[in-house]
Amino acid sequence: MAGKQNGNIKLILFFIIITAVFALVISFIYRKFIFDETLMPGRILCNQIMNAHITYYNEHGKYLVIDKQSVNRDLPLDARNNLYFSVFSTYPLQKNKQGISVFGSDKMQDYEIRLVFDAIKDKPQSLKNLKMEVVRKKSS
Image 1: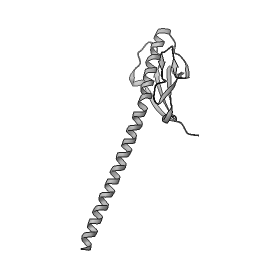
Image 2: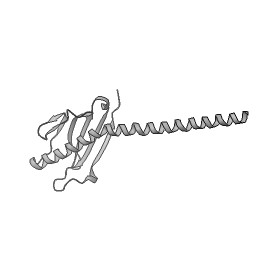
Image 3: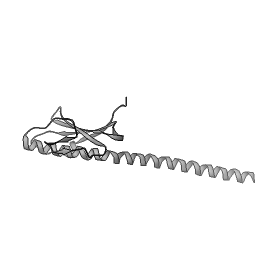
Image 4: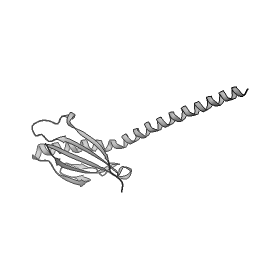
């Protein structure tokens, strides 16, 4: 009788351990999914800024340098309604590249999304050459 009870206890413990591992894996996957979805408005804003930036260049022959603004009438962009990324900057980089940064607000305030694209004048932008990265700033 005692052997049967030990077998049942082992089976129950095994089931509990497997369930706990499964719950942990699911929670990590869910948290990553939620984090990626929270970054999506910033990624979309980066693409909008890049497209407006290229259009501005085609019309005026130069790129704008913008330092931490939410609204720019020249591009025209308004990021004030963006839920998590409402401030952006544009800047030139070395080797005919342009950079765009969008800065997080609210619960994403420690994050910045950077997009680097080619500033070559005679060729359209190749999507292969786009480099987007998420940077987490160190909290003070």
